[in-house]
Length: 404
Image 1 (cartoon, rainbow, N blue to C red):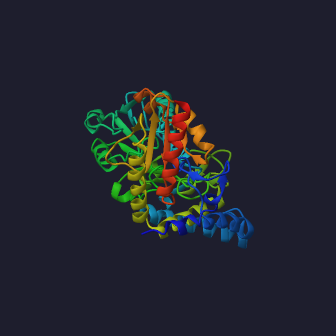
Image 2 (image 1 turned 180 degrees about the vertical axis):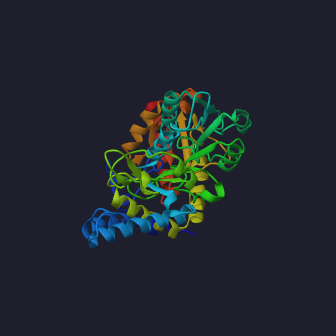
Image 3 (image 1 turned 90 degrees about the vertical axis):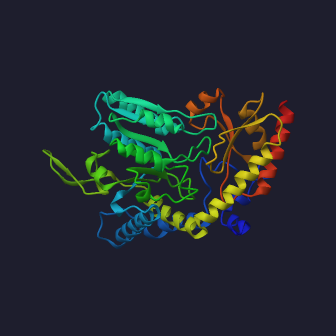
């Protein structure tokens, strides 16, 4: 069993008050809070080893380079990548998706097809739309049902030799649905298509094994898993990363430059142009260490209890409807109160110290499917408690009475 109070003490922000009330932070789907060990690691980097990496022979540069590459190795082990050079540091999930989509511009042609799921965040829709506009390829959508589940029978029908890449999230940010990605990857590979998995919402809750999944690309952000903002990871199979052209030109990603011709560096540096977020890359390794010390089995158990308890408590409220009722689901509850705009509920409960997300959650096609303007989203992390859920439920009841 986790000692939740001991864990909460690791997060200084959780002890503060907002609008005179103890903070209840249920916007973990947007970004997680940071433990003191992560905050200290950022400070330690800038105080002790701040230097550019891979370029200097001086001591600080060597120390920074070593720490950066050690972190790459931690991430490789965490996701079980075959090689460290299959782990690319990026600025986040969005950058990783755009990098791959840009690379496929050199591969796709008119008549080719890109499959994207109906459950996607805008960052896993728009780059593929832009790619199809540029190449003449066609974007096709894997449909969902009323529970917020992808319809696998329809997915199977969409797949063909025209399919060149399939992209889906591992877990829906708006509904919490856990998608059957292993099935989807195997089916896509059977027709010769590549697969990109958006793992931004998955990595805070589980450890993806990219070799077992056999995905071609897996992208995620550090800030949703107790790490800093502005850093993320693109995992890509070595063969695919060698096939794709560089996304950006500049320092670090070159082997030799003349005005007549430039040759590119080996992986991973081919895709890591310019000075990166060095502190972010190093400290992401610290955040992963912290979460592994707690243990992802323990995290999943705690979050499942919060999901079940929160669902039960919220359904006590008359007129409340939950969107996203998949059997396979993580700790996200999206809901509305009949006749009340989600923004109004969110605004009132914020005055009571409760942070939830309101709106379309950068997933407007999902909201259009349900014919709603948005939802109130409570997203839980392992450091949250049932007592906090009780506080939220009472606040929602109070807001509902005020707005009725």
